[in-house]
Image (cartoon, rainbow, N blue to C red):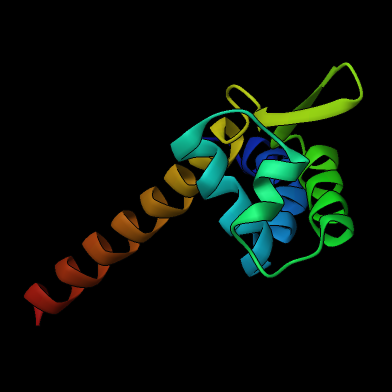
Length: 114
């Protein structure tokens, strides 16, 4: 089990990621990049009703959270998922799952004693 300080550090790392993923448009952009790979802003905008300017703003939020990376190619900017960007989230969710497992085991032991 992780020490409380380590779990708190993980939680702090995850806050901007959860905030970025809390928006449906950004979550949709992440899904599209995950399924289709790196894309230009133009191609990300084509299949949505969201403006190019709005997509650009959402991509900047995802980039600041460390979830996507930008690569310039000529005059275009291409965005793709950042490798290992969700590792801290996965680790934090494992900490939470472990706490729940331990709590449920204590509850089960308590109920079986009665």
